[in-house]
Length: 252
Ligand SMILES: C[S@@+](CC[C@H](N)C(=O)[O-])C[C@H]1O[C@@H](n2cnc3c(N)ncnc32)[C@H](O)[C@@H]1O
Image (cartoon, rainbow, N blue to C red; front, side, top):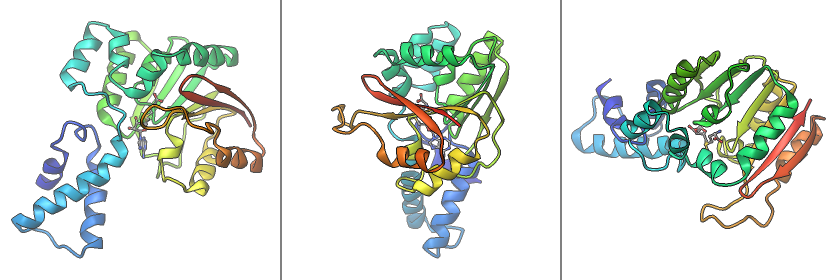
C-alpha cells in the first residue's frame, strides 16, 4: 500500500516489516475513527503518529550509519566496524562484555543457539559448529546477519519475528535475549514471564543494560522484578555484571 511506503520512508524505519507498519496504521485509524482514503492534511498527521509508534521498535540502537556503509563493512569483512554500527554490539566490543559473554557460552558448549531480538549480535557469536537461529523485527539488521551467515557458512535460520506476538520458538540448547526484555511491553511482567516460559530451551542468557540513557551507571543494576519472576517459576540462575550489562545465566 502506498501509505505504508510513505510511512517507512525514513532511514531508521526502512527495515521494519510491512505487516507491523500495517498493524500500527490500522490501530491508529481505528482508535481515531479515521477512514481511508485520507485527506491531505490528515495524511501528514497519520504518518507522523504511526512513525512515532514504530520508533519504539527501533529505539536508539542504531548508531548513525547508512545501509550502504554497513554493506560496505560486510563486503570488506570489517567486522568490528560493522558491529559498531549497532549500539548494543558496539558497547560490548568497547568493554569486556564480549570476552565475558563468550566465555560463559563456551562453558555451556551449546550445539545450537536461538538469539531473539538479535540485532547484529549473531555476527559476534556465531561459529560454524553451532546451529544459529537469529530473529528480530528489524529486517535491515537481519539481512546483514543473513549475508554474513552465507559468507561464513553458518547453518541455522535468520527470520523476522515480533516477540510480542511469537508463540513458537525453535528448541535449541541455549536461548539469548540480550538487552531487550525490558523494552518489550514495558512494565508488563506477565508478558515477560509468559515469554520465558514459552521458550523451550533449557539454558538461557538474558541481559539488561546497567547504564542509563545518558551513560551513567544505574544505582541498582539488578532487575528485581525479573529475579522475582525467575524465583516464582523456579528457574535457577547466576548473574554476572560487566561495565554496561548484567547477564542472568538461567537453567531450567
Ligand atoms: C537494544 S537492541 C539489542 C540487540 C541485541 N539483542 C544485542 O544485545 O546486541 C534491541 C533489539 O530488539 C529488537 N526489537 C524491538 N522490538 C522487537 C519486537 N517486538 N520483536 C522482535 N525484536 C524486537 C530491535 O530491532 C533491536 O534489534
